[in-house]
Image (cartoon, rainbow, N blue to C red):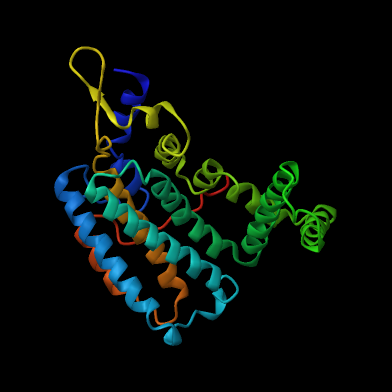
Length: 288
């Protein structure tokens, strides 16, 4: 057994007791088995249907006053999370779970980042701007190095001026949030879930040109060599299991900021159906 196989076996056994013990002392019914996976598929379909129903009635959407500043951006992340889960479910059921591993990785990261955004408020928005400006400058520098037109101009100067203004008068709250959002491990650790970075890191192997992707369409031929496959290796149950958890987490966040809390009843129902605690939300780690 090679190192990757050993790690995969560990990742394929979700540490449910440790994770859900933070939310409820009751033993979870969320297990790494086909019965739980089937319930997870049902939960994903249900939450996607409710999301689609809410999204179709945009004129009636309103947000709680305390969250007006971040609500539009939270809405966009929530839509992104839900559509990502839709892709993960569809492709995993076809046997292409590992092919959409980058989508699953983004889904996991954004589910925690959504809570981070709502808690951080306007400071979190500024942190997102700071991180995005940094990435834009890197992109502009890349464009200039390859000789493409359009790198120079007022837009670049506007971005550089914004960065300079932040550097001249740093906001400690924004800096703290910026350092969290630019790194998935830091973000997950801030919310007391350092173990969540393990599957995230593993999924990164399918984003890069790695040994994992080089073996994805191969199987053992029984003689010590590789046999060619026309479909990828099966990704197991993790995709649908954790996509359902991420959708519930994101739904709880959105239910808090949407007026009239339209998700409460359905989230209670699907949480009970899946076998996870009712208040399944990322919780920021208390500072010692």
